[in-house]
Length: 155
Image 1 (cartoon, rainbow, N blue to C red):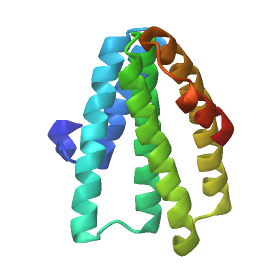
Image 2 (image 1 turned 180 degrees about the horizontal axis):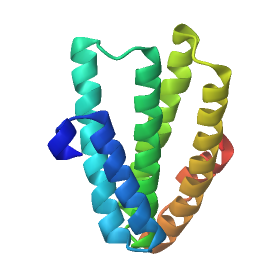
Image 3 (image 1 turned 30 degrees about the horizontal axis):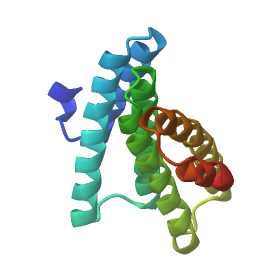
Image 4 (image 1 turned 180 degrees about the vertical axis):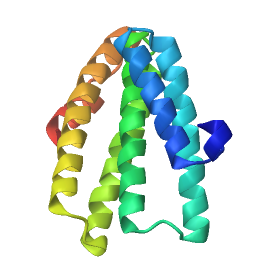
């Protein structure tokens, strides 16, 4: 895909996501995480280019945000499986924030309710996982459980 579309194309990022998904199914977490990291970099690049040029239509921006949230979730899951809990927490929080942006933008962009509902469901799932990760991280780090309680409450 890089040769035919370039390294800054939405479909190139999707190809990296698919590669990451294949590695994730094979339980090759490090290779999957690398592919997801590449996809995230491309999505960020595409997003920055689109904001500068405003060439993506509303559906394209929604698709980009949902894709970014999903790849951050997948990357965070890989980190979790590798016991890199702090990094997993950071990535899942980024995914939650991306979904929150989509939900808040939905009011002024007339985003279809099906997409908004999917964002709420994804966000709730990630908040539940975050609650578990915060518990695990807090036990290891001997910290307060305030973040885990907050994540569970929000979920």
